[in-house]
Length: 134
Image 1 (cartoon, rainbow, N blue to C red):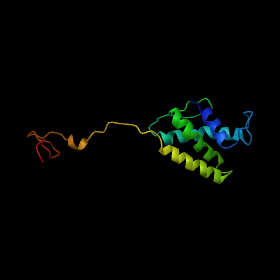
Image 2: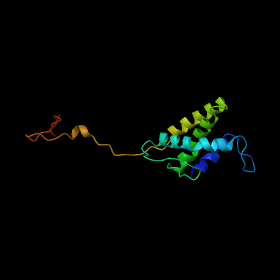
Image 3: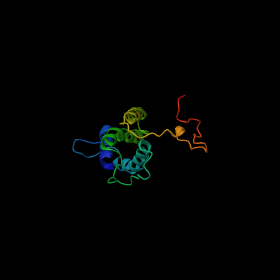
C-alpha cells in the first residue's frame, strides 16, 4: 500500500473526488500537506517504527493494509479539513480515534524479572524466594 491509496480514500471521504476521478477543491494544497501528516499518523499508530517518512505519493505505508486503509484516511481527512470545516474534521477525527483503538492486538512474551534475581552465596535468591513453599 502506498501513500496515494490513503490520499485517494481521504479525498473520497471528504467528497473531493468527482465521478470521473478528478478532484474538486484544493487537491494540490491537500497533497502538499498530506505527506507530512501521514508520516505523523503512521508513527502515532506504530511508535516502534524507527523510520517511516512519507515524502510523496509513492512512499510505502509501513502499516498493515487493514489498519492503513481503515484508519489513516480518517486521520488524514480530519487534519486536512481542520481549518475549513470543523464539524467534518471532528467527525473524521473521532472515527480515526475509534479505529485506532480497534487495531488487532499483538502477542508478545512477557518475562517476570522479579523472580529472576541473582543467586546469593548460600545458594538462595536475592529476591528472597528460595524455591520452597511459601
